[in-house]
Image (cartoon, rainbow, N blue to C red):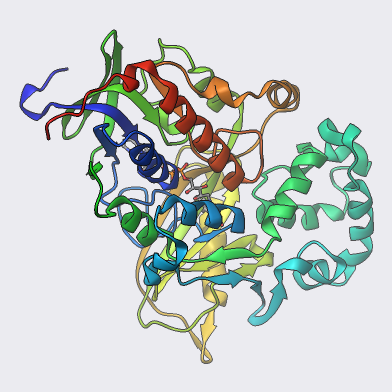
Length: 439
Ligand SMILES: Cc1cc2nc3c(=O)[nH]c(=O)nc-3n(C[C@H](O)[C@H](O)[C@H](O)COP(=O)(O)OP(=O)(O)OC[C@H]3O[C@@H](n4cnc5c(N)ncnc54)[C@H](O)[C@@H]3O)c2cc1C
């Protein structure tokens, strides 16, 4: 286990340099500036699942780069300078107000606020679906007793009714694989999130700038391309075995989804309660097919191809990422993945630019566990009722990120879990007594 040559000692090890990891590192740097902090990630850059264009094992053009205004404010406040002094380029934003709908080869624009109204349903699923929509709307009327009511029970229609194809499409939009089994509460929460006017920006650059802020007593050591493969908890703290050697820390903060951390985290210490959730909940698989386009055509940011149940994100110029959501799969060979890839390929053929089919020089297929969107009923109920952010943290092990929380709005989970984790770090005796280390 030990590889003395590459060994490094830190006060705080942060596993994962996505949005949560970077914000945590920067907040702790402000809170306890004397701490020696290492931020480790298997990728060569910060940002994690946020949108980026980089071909790496299982990661290429993943994620949107839209966030809620709430998370934007939080991100801006994380810079200690006033917002006017923020690095301009990183914060040039706009609103994500509309999406493009491609049916046949005809495209139309849909305002996000109209997504879950008759107007949106007509645009996405055609006029025939509008009458059915009224029943759905009625079933989605939400009051407090409905918090744990399964949607199918309220809709009171057989699973094979014509409305099914409309609900399949909505499943894809909302990121919930089986709407019939979802609670009314979770569907409503996701609807509010998806149809809110999200903010666009280059958050990866913003996080990079935040990490490298000058004039700090202690820089944060960002260790890129450093896959964590194993960990061990001892009386003196944690040892992380990585592809770059062994890193030691008094405290470990895990800032990645439970289904990732479960692969390498020593599960003997307390607070791994949250990792057990990873096995009981149902992550969703996202199948992505990314094309490097020959030119840089001006395409819409987000396009829906309802017939195929596919959405396409146009990332950095020339990089079109088509995505389909399926129930959880772990293998690229599984029949549902193969079927999804066929839909993605058909959807790509529907795209045209200036009357011509798009040309691609490269294609890249990937499978990602995507979001922790829907938990099984009985378990979900217990989970929501008992959720306590304080439980995220124990003496030497802490968790934060978008999957740690009771909300179907990932940004909200990220903010709340981050604040709880920072507060816990501030209170940890083991870190309060740390004397400044020589660097
Ligand atoms: C397709 C898609 C679309 C999305 N759309 C939106 C959206 O529109 N708006 C929105 O707000 N959110 C969206 N999200 C969610 C958003 O991406 C997340 O909320 C946010 O990025 C989570 O940040 P995080 O830091 O918790 O996790 P991550 O970004 O996943 O960060 C975890 C980091 O840990 C690293 N890691 C994992 N395992 C290891 C290991 N063994 N060793 C070393 N490092 C490791 C990963 O490389 C990663 O960088 C989307 C996500 C996806 C996948």
